[in-house]
Structures are given as C-alpha cells and as structure tokens.
Amino acid sequence: MAIEMKKVSSGKLRAIGYDAGGRVLQVEFDDGRVVQYQGVGQEAWRRLSTSGSMSSYFRDNIEDEFTARRLR
Image (tube, rainbow, N blue to C red; front, side, top):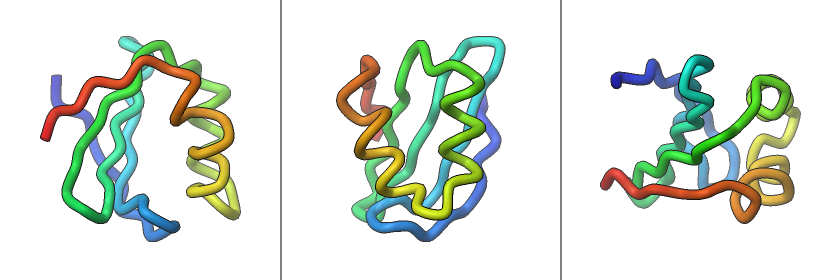
C-alpha cells in the first residue's frame, strides 16, 4: 500500500500521509524514520493535517495513542 505523502516542516515532522480505507497514518521524521500508526480515524487525520502546530498535535494526540509500526 503506497500512501501519498505531503511534505511538512513542523518540529520533527517532515511528511505526513493518510490511507482512509486502512485508517493508517504514515509519518516521516527529520531523522529519516518512517512510521505508520494504525487505527487513526479521519477526524484525527483532519485535525493533524490542518493544525497550526502539527508537531504538537501529533505529540499530544497520536504518538502514544496508536499502535506504531516502523517502516524504516
């Protein structure tokens, strides 16, 4: 499953993407890591992708709330 990524620059976040069908959020970090978070709802994706501070929203609402799987 290829997730289309959108480049961002917020804290340690460098790109984000979302697969609505699979409810998977994919995040690329400034150190090159790519991590997928499982079970992320569309509302959480909408709030993250439109947040004025994506890094803070990610840290507060996603990072420790969803199952993570590192791709690289």
